[in-house]
Structures are given as C-alpha cells and as structure tokens.
Image (cartoon, rainbow, N blue to C red):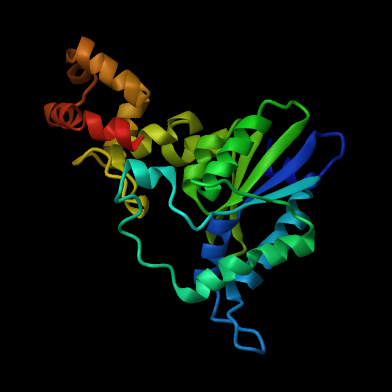
Length: 263
C-alpha cells in the first residue's frame, strides 16, 4: 500500500481503522507548540495540537473507525521488572499533566472510544489491538504516533504507521519498505535492534559498546537476538568469517543477559 493509495480513501478497499497513540501525540504537540491558554488561564497548546492532528489525519486518511489509547497513572508491569524503567526522564510538567487529563473530553466530543488497561501503557494497548486486527483481511489499520517503537507492529497491507516527524503537521508514512529504508531490516527486527543498542529515552541499556551501526550489521547478517546467540554458542567462528570483529563478539558474550532482557 502506497501513501497515494492511503489518501485515495476508495471504498473498494478494506475498511480503515485509525489507531491513536494519544500519549505520544499529546507529548509531541505540547513541545511543538507555544504555551497557549484559555480565557481562564488553563494550558491548551497540547489539546489544540491534538485536535489539529486529529482533523488532519481524518482528512488525509479518511478512516472508517477511530480508536484512542491512553496511559494510566499507575506504574506498569515494566516498572516491576525493571525499577529504573524510564528513570532518566524528567518529571512531566504540570501544564502537560493537566492536558493529558483533559484529553478525554476531546475524544468524547469527537465520539472516539478510549482504551486503556491497568499496568500497561498506551503503546501496549496499541500493540494489542494492532496484533489482533492484523488477522482481519477486511480491515487495514493505521497507527498515528510519534514513537519509532511502533514500527515493530507493521504488517504490510494490514498495519502501517503514520508517524509525526517534527511539529504537528510533518508526518511520514511507514510500511515495510519504509522500515527497510530507515533501518536496513524489516519491522520484525525492531525489537532486536533496541535489545542490542538500547533506548536512552526509556533507559533501556542494550549491550554496552554496541551502537546502531553494529546492531544493524549483526541483524542483517544473523537475524534475531535469539539466532545470534544460538550461532554464537554453536559456531562462533562464523562471526569472524562474516567480518565481525573479535571485540564485538566479546561484547555480545558479555552482554547476552542484558540483550535478552532489553528486547
């Protein structure tokens, strides 16, 4: 499916679901726009940005259905597994918290249902819905988000991503081909990539000493983290034969537990 096809909105195609990662959208709008406020002084910039992006997405994508997902206030299961999950992030500003709490009123005004789940984040809910609907041949799903992690959910022809690049109007469409162009591998390996080179924004460690270039090379040559470590235990000489430096092999050996946990 091409971007041109997306914008055509032809009814001969499957029904279209627009899945909103509302937390990521509101964060992007809050930091992209000036400090707007209502006549009573309440902050409104993020909410204005949310509505602007929502109207643009409806006009561009012409969805048949729209569903929003949201974070909940309590900690998630990841915090139970890893106490320092997102520990490097600064405290959310009060003005943004107020607007996150008021976002429901926007979705209610548009008649958009909101999904959440105790112990999980908005993107977990997005992932659950996207995985379920990917099995339906008569439905295509487009995820609106600012989060690159969502690219792991792409299933060509079924699930694609409409990602905010900069500001609130610059968006890029991602299908499997676009993921290959961006990373050098497909959506199925996004979690392997993050497992090896980590994710600073979420305080995910990855393998110390392995960056984006090396992680990409390893995935292109050997596949998933599981495949890499299976081969490393069975026939480590193949790494040298395929041009992987001994230093990298040692980093892999030392970082196995962190790689698997980070993924």
